[in-house]
Image 1 (cartoon, rainbow over the protein chains, first blue to last red):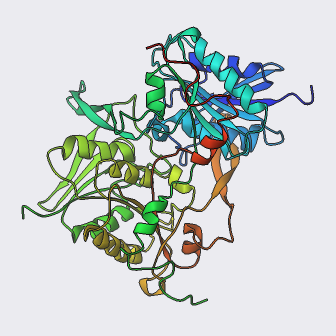
Image 2 (image 1 turned 180 degrees about the vertical axis):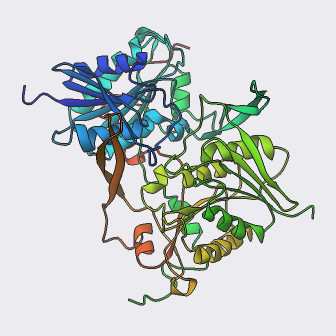
Length: 267
Length: 267
């Protein structure tokens, strides 16, 4: 048992969500599972960290092969709490974040708390997989997600995958035999345009709800995660975190009238 | 006056911060300024959006050339409120986010609310500039930041810069004549390792504060934002939002045993 793998599971829908139960189902076959997940829903929390509030940790469940903790912070806080406190003395073999209620394809990778946590996990030197199901319903059917999640986790843990590794996996709605398999993709370009619903609260104060629509900038492309999902495939996008725009870096050399260094060093 | 430029200013330290006053100083010389900024501090909020709470908007100030609104959401919510509601009928020429109290170099671009808002601004088709000063103090001296901010904004608005454009600008501590100029850089690789301060609240409940240290993975590199800041330069990193890891995309083709499509289409 000494060599049992250790899998950290987190999400952004909260430790008690249906998708968390599905993620635990994915992870359990591969080793000991420790869950550190938000107390409440943290959807749309991106890579946010809690800087100005104290955070509370609650142990929900403790069995030999499954421990569950609820943490009062963001998904990224949960990952940090796991690696830098709870599991500090242990070697974590894999991070699973999800299974999210709702897809995180295209630009949603930037807003997603699920993917924020997966990215953070990959910073700790083990593979990290964000799993999302393209269904926001509380009673969503996770059968196909669990099946494909297990298969992808199995392939990653079988080795041969270089690190760092962070995968953004999205599963379309459907029974396993309705899905068409796994498709490696790139992130679809696009953005959200919002509409604000305007209302008045009981005290006569105006308030707004954010709501919006995804604008697909490349609806014709067939190598994107959006296309894969829309055509019944499980999309897998490897994610990296160097945001530098290298093309612009070259173009901008002229604009600011400077080379790499403008004035000679004083030191 | 019809052709006056319109500049949206936001930040993550809140509309009343000293850095916001400095950002307004930068923007005012270039046109009409509309500020939509968080009510309270939103540091570390990344690209987070508010999905499950109503949002309140307050007008703080209205002059011909300067309007200021406080919004109860995240920095990204503020940008969305500005473009998709308040300024819906107008053309925004530039977004300035900042001036942040604290640098957003290296991997901080992922956690930063300042940069979350700048990135969001760039999705609306105008240049967006995140400005940060490498000083967390409430009474930080923004003189050099304002001077360099004006210069960079001037260069960007002078044209010739292709869109989309998002710049992560960080200014070191020092008087203008102590700084060595602007340096175009790439994002330094690295990550944070945390320590959790553990305490007990007055009711005997254990709580944690997140605190940490940046681990620089390439301290020798001289073309990074970390190096530039440490050597007295204003660092300028152009930022893009395609997180796809294209190198891994190729390497992974073998791992999942699939090509672009695994099963023939049913449709």
